[in-house]
Image 1 (spheres, rainbow, N blue to C red):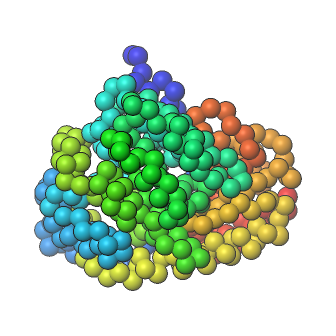
Image 2 (cartoon, protein in one colour):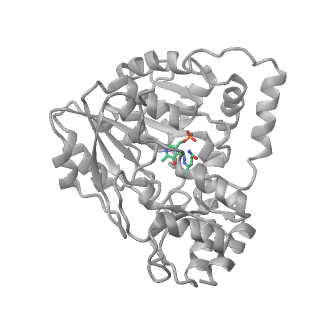
Length: 378
Ligand code: PMP
Ligand code: GLN
């Protein structure tokens, strides 16, 4: 069979989690919490099941959840999306991203991708017959070169994919970055697909700069988020897309034949839980404590800390410890030292070595402490 995705193997997250499990390593590789979610959200979903919310929901998602999402976005970013025509509940952000790409990218269209980049983007573009055009960011600060970004845009550009807060670098877009983006797309037909799954993990008092805050950007954007990140339920796979009605209409044409709908009781439970802003309002402080604890510990090792403004990822430069390539260093760290990490090279489409790996700090303090103790031996 001629593969549609000849260059795709098993994702690095699966590979490293399997190796960590096999070796009994502390798994700071794949991004997921090692603590449980709030009992109240489990209760809300269980109640929804017991109350009979067990058949197909409406195609775009249950109305109370779409309404709760719209209220949240309006409260935080001041933009009113119509829950009827502009918000769609998805099976996690992964499906939202693929569906938005399939709905907009025609064969031969160019899609600008900023590297290091989340691993689902490029295969999704390729499935649509699109051509990824890469703009690479470099360690240690991974600053966005907006001149390079502007030069990447051609008459064939359909879409720019952005991700803030950024996986894996922890970099966050600020207001001046958003204005630069606005200037670049002004007067073009280029659409934006904005992956904001870490929207509630921005630290040091900085705001999350959603494209929803910028009318010129919002009118050409799909905004994607995921409850998996925000409510510590990565296995539930529920997320959403907010986009202007015309874009949402095209999104839903694909969505209805991709998944049709997303599981009902989760949506009903999430709608109830989302009514209380406390869990997401308190999330930055919750994760900032973990970030600070982890960074303080790493500060006593030979790893060099890179900035972490957002997400639950911390990148480190290990060049003082080893000159192995990143993938080999990550495997060695897992098998010999007992701490799993993700090579940042896995987020680039071509061989790219900068001596940097990513750790996930969405872990109990005891887990982080065990990992730090092992890392301090290096
Ligand atoms: N985008 C980014 C940047 C992510 O880190 C992730 C999850 N690791 C996703 C999308 C996918 O989110 P979900 O699990 O909701 O599909
Ligand atoms: N997004 C998570 C990460 O970056 C992993 C999700 C997955 O395993 N596909 O680690």
